[in-house]
Image (cartoon, rainbow, N blue to C red; front, side, top):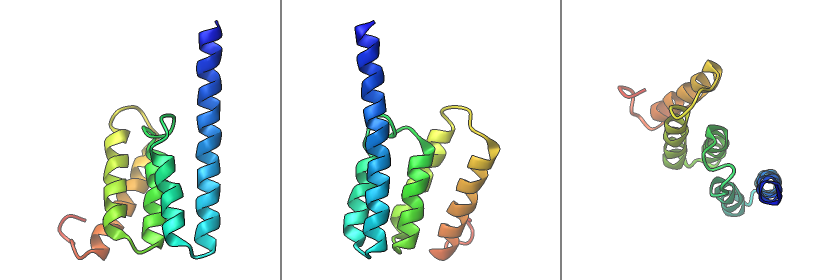
Length: 114
């Protein structure tokens, strides 16, 4: 019982930490502090509670596109696609990732892959 409560508390802490990282990243981005924003987004990616979540990688890819980091955006979207195959997700999530990946590939001049 105590062990379960401890695990639940840790998950909640990590979820709150994920939200905090996202908020701080957005604040840094608004201030045009791109490297600082990238550090917060990347911190969010390595949290155990959020690492396997496609949405976290999708959020990071959106940031990378706004920052002009197309290669990093492509890598993040490919990771999100890999994570999607691990469990069931709504088709709309897969569709958003596919469209965004095609957009990145087109932007990088890789029309055949898009």
